[in-house]
Length: 357
Image (cartoon, rainbow, N blue to C red; front, side, top):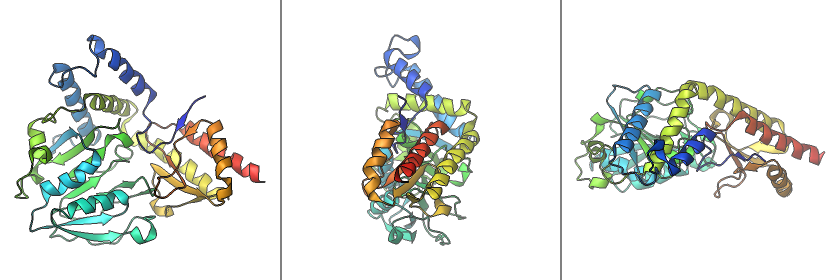
């Protein structure tokens, strides 16, 4: 039976990526060595790393625009503190949009480095919408936002105009839709939600925003140190970077970000249409802010929980339980998930409806 993986992360990846990664574990490009044992200083890995960096810039249309690409460790949570360490001077403030748990965690870390102004928040409404019509202070060192909220199923559809540097946590919707990536001065994303396996974080950073905070930054937290060392200041996660490269290749071969956006929109529209039509289910995010990557919903009658679980299991549906902090259901519709899998989930929801009739 085919398994339909709706997990929020580690995420589903294309089958061909799994197959090529598995082969590389045994024998990388007929070298006689496993990807798990090659030196990170070897020509083979340097070629992998440089191709991955180049593909990131190509897919984002950021070539020759002053950006550097880093593949680091520590997850997006490490960037919560690395960002203010590098960008926030002690006498400055940073502007943050509070739109979910991960945004709140980023705010918590930034407060250790200086003044943080929360310019808008949806916390009082359980983060079920994206704040709007807020003003970004022009005297802030940078503006930080989270483009997609995996837990609450909300997503920023537009980004505000500002003249200050913009930092964005794109962990769960990176490469999912065509946007103007040049709007951002720093993008970071844990790979495990839509790009690769756990263990590596992508950072895309405009070089001219660095070395202005006046802080003495520990080397391991200094973006410039990592740029100078070409992402090899310490031993990188070779396997995670290689698997991310395979996924970037697949993304390009599939027609690029715009083509995948079309497919992602079709998946999201199919599922949200059923959530709104089916009298047993209810969406939890405001309709205008619904995420194209993470659809969150609940059963109106909790007595049907076990029956729905049985139906999902019989159809090979995996990973749709909501985050432990909110419960309910969450169907992650990442790039590699096929429309067929969404049809299977919709059929399961309709089967539950028939059961109650």
